[in-house]
Each structure stands twice: as structure tokens, then as C-alpha cells.
Amino acid sequence: ALADYVHARGLKLGIYGDLGTLTCGGYPGTTLDRVEQDAQTFAEWGVDMLKLDGCYSSAEEQAKGYPAMARALNATGHPIVYSCSWPAYQGGLPPKVNYTVLAEVCNLWRNYDDIQDSWDSVLSILDWFFANQDVLQPAAGPGHWNDPDMLIIGNFGLSYEQSRSQMALWTVMAAPLLMSTDLRTISPSAKEILQNRLMIRINQDPLGIQGRRIVKEKSHIEVFLRPLSQAASALVFFSRRTDMPFLYTTSLAKLHFPEDAVYEVQDVFSGKIISGLKTGDSFSVVINPSGVVMWYLHPMAQPWHGVRQQGPSKGFHPVLL
Ligand SMILES: *[C@@H]1O[C@H](CO)[C@@H](O)[C@H](O)[C@H]1NC(C)=O
Ligand SMILES: *[C@@H]1O[C@H](CO)[C@@H](O)[C@H](O)[C@H]1NC(C)=O
Image (tube, rainbow, N blue to C red; front, side):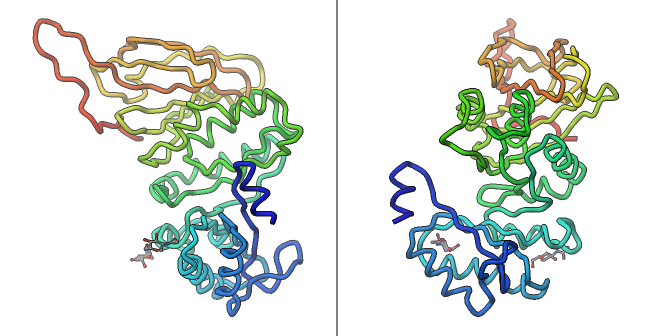
């Protein structure tokens, strides 16, 4: 009945479980001998996603249980997105975590601490994910994602600018966008951030490439880049400053975009379009404290200059640092 109620509202039903005697909250868990029974029960209920936590289970039980649940979910014949807390219990990094194995077993996985309703928490998650991007970035791809935890937009802890920052940075991380907020009371401004169509399109880009931090300035401005399909890309200019809006000047050349290309740029929040931005052109963006400017860029067909010029090659991606 609950599944029908949720599905009738165009939503998906997720359920939380734990691979131990008890869940972290003290409710009954799924012990190893009950994995198949629980998978079958969830499928019969019409559950669309399972998040399987790891409290009260040993590393050995997790190494057996997480792959066993993947097989059991698959065997139900019902598509159930599978979220594993496994790496979070192993410190999130190799050699304890093998991301090749994780990508085969889970659709998404929690690598790090639970998010709390505060900007400090968002920043600590960002810091960890981008400090470890060399390990984490290659692990993500279609059907298998790093999960920096839920969006807290619409709650108490984030300002308007910080809410936009979480949305932009989670999108660049190719994070699964799961909302943790009360849909009955959410504000129009939070709703607008969460329903930004271009943002969601970037997040759901079919190539599924996770973005990286490519610049860390002394001025506390950081730049993030996510390559997208059809030679497009998303750039996020993020300010960690706490004083006032900052005028940041750079060029696509400085961000290692290919020479001699011309781009159409769309501001993901305002929708404003800049046409004909050349790689070598200097440009400036005004970034609010703890805020972002986010761009969607795609190469434009180049004009003729007497000789026939080759357009940017399909499938080209800017050099990643
Ligand atoms: C089970 O796994 C097979 C092989 O990977 C896949 O083709 C199939 O879609 C999966 N079924 C479900 C219900 O997940
Ligand atoms: C990770 O697991 C894969 C598949 O089992 C294996 O081939 C690879 O050697 C492992 N990587 C490390 C670093 O242990």
C-alpha cells in the first residue's frame, strides 16, 4: 500500500536496511542468512531502491554480504537500485576499498561521513572528495556512482548561495541527487534550485564522467570541470571567501580548453547566454561568498576564414588536471 501511494505521486520508494544483527538505529537488520529472503520481500513490496548500511557487521561479513545482496536483488528480477555503505566502513580509500569491485557490486556507495544540516558539513565532504579525486573520480561511471550523501537544500542549515553551491558541486561530482527535505513545506527558492532542468541534465549526462577540481587559487576561488557528452562541459567557479562578492578573472585557455575553439556559454542559474567566447578571451565572473557561478559550455561551429577550418572534433574533452 505504501509503495502504491508513493508511486501514484510520481516518486520512487527507497528502503533502508543494514547488513548486521541491528540497523544503526537499533532496528532488526539483515544477517547473512537472511539476505535472499529480505531481497525477495523488498521486491514483492515494490521497493525501487535499497540502501544497505553496515552497523553491527564485521569487515568479513560485509565482504561477503554486500556482493551477496547484489546477487539476491538481481535474482528477484525487479530493478532495485542498490546503495552500499560498505566503503564508508573501510575508510573510503584503497587498499582497504577496491573500487573496481564496488563498481561491479553496487550502483552507488557512501564513501564518507553522513551529511549534517550545516555548511561546515558540506565543506568537509567537499574537501574529502576533492582531496581524493584521483582515486574516486575514475570509479564513477554509468550505473556506479560515488555518493557524497544527500542534498540538504530546503532545510535549516544552508543559505541561498550555499544551497546553489551544494547543487552545483554535487552535479559536477556526478552525485546521485537524493533530496533530504520535507516536500510539503519546501520554499519556492529551494524548489527552484532543485528543479533546475539544465542542472539536472548536466548531472544526468549519459557519459557519466565525474568532474574534478582543476584550480585552487590563493584567493580562495576554486574551479571545477565536468566533461559532458557532445564535447560540452560544465564549469563551476566556487568561492570559499567569507567577505564579499569576488571578481574572478580567467580564460578558457588558463583552464586548459583547446586553443582556437569558440564556445557558447550558458549560465546554469540565470540562463543568460554568452555567444562566441574564444579560448583566449579573458572573462570575469562575480562569485558571492560561499557561492558559485556555474556555466554550461559547448563548442560552436566555427566561421569560415577563407580557408576551410576544421570544427572541434566530436568526443573531444578538455585536458584534465
Ligand atoms: C541482472 O543481471 C544481468 C546481468 O548483469 C542484467 O542483464 C539484468 O538486467 C539484471 N536484472 C536485474 C533485475 O537487475
Ligand atoms: C580489485 O579487485 C579486482 C577484481 O577482483 C582485482 O583484479 C584487482 O587486482 C583488485 N585491486 C587491488 C588494488 O587489489
